[in-house]
Length: 191
Image 1: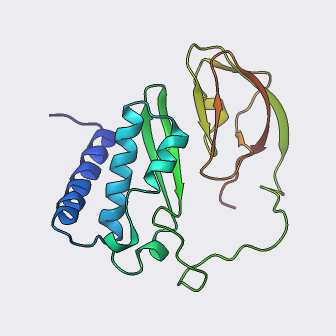
Image 2: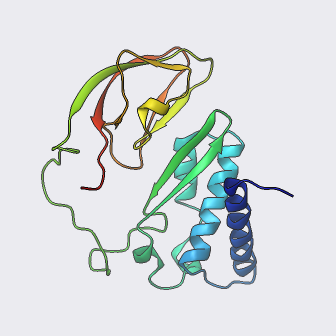
């Protein structure tokens, strides 16, 4: 059987998730790798079934309880991101604190500063209009190159080298026929 790298990755994820399910069935606690695999597999299956991304995020945050995890797992896994295949195409699904907050004194804890943070302050920003001319909603994730958009999404400007100016791990949903003005930002690279 010939599998694409994406198909092979999906089967590996499923296998790791099945190991997690077996451990859970016998009452064993999960470590970080099997807990992540379990949640990612569930996300991929929900997406395949066409569940709305907001509902998937809600469900994913409730899949495992602290008593099902080895100590330190919440601190070791501050977020999960998985590219899931929806009926409309693939989208990045971001789950913040998938196993609950690690606590302010946990190793690796992030303490946010007060005030506003400007996204990519040193990069060029533009405003553009995106129009979904298709018959289905289209999701555009935070770091997706806008010159590779779904052909159903039309724009009023050349957007090579740009992405949406939204926080990492988030996405914008354009409904069928929707036209929306959005801010885009030049993509960064290694300097």
